Amino acid sequence: MKRSRLGLLLLLGAAVIQTVTGAAELAAVDIPQTPEAAHRGAEIVTSVCLACHSLKYVKYGDLSRLGFSGKDLDTLRSGKSLKSPLLTDMAPDALRESFGIVPPDLSLMAKARDGGPLYIYSLLTGFYHTADGTVDNRLFPGIKMPDVLSYSDARDATQRAPLQEQARDVAAFLNWAADPRAEERRRLGYYVLGYLAALTFLLYLSKRKIWARLD
Picture 1 (cartoon, one colour):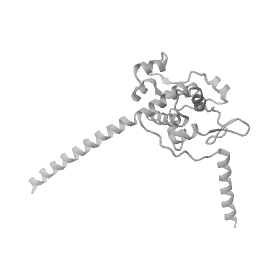
Picture 2 (tube, helix red, strand yellow):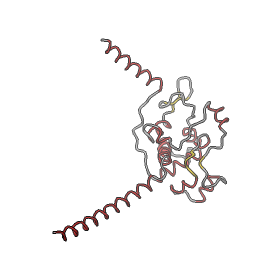
Picture 3 (cartoon, rainbow, N blue to C red):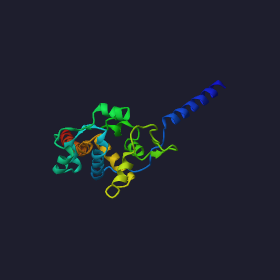
Picture 4 (cartoon, rainbow, N blue to C red):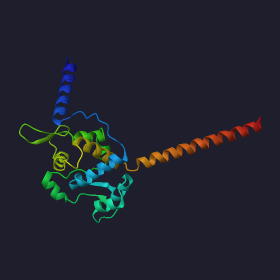
């Protein structure tokens, strides 16, 4: 009986924790893993998110992997070196004064959160207006970040894609940013496997030739 009560208390405690932390299911959408989607996401991140967030492990020169031209990079970096990381121009003290905290670096966000890019998409599309008119987030209740994509979507309605498409592209870019050289390693892996297959075949032929002499 005591064990049953203990189990019930644990379940209730878990339910309370889930309610307090605002745990919510991640959206079931496909996040495109293409250079084109990541390119569009990079444009949004550098024009909107970089106002408060940084990506200290991503350099401006890395964006050329996504198809950014030299002219595009010149516009984005505004005189900074191609080897400079993507850092916000706002000072930490100013960010802390505005939001109460310094917004986290986004370089590894897709790796740091369960669900990866789906977490990012669900967060960006999870904002809603409460009964008292304030803005909150279903995935992260009490979040200090404003609903920046809805704001930019309303402001530039004729130029920007719908919020959901923007969120998918941002998630695609941040997923790429967490491992910009993943595609290179994947291609290198194919070469290595091909080399090992050829080497195995040559060793097999050598083995047959040597054993034929012994017979």
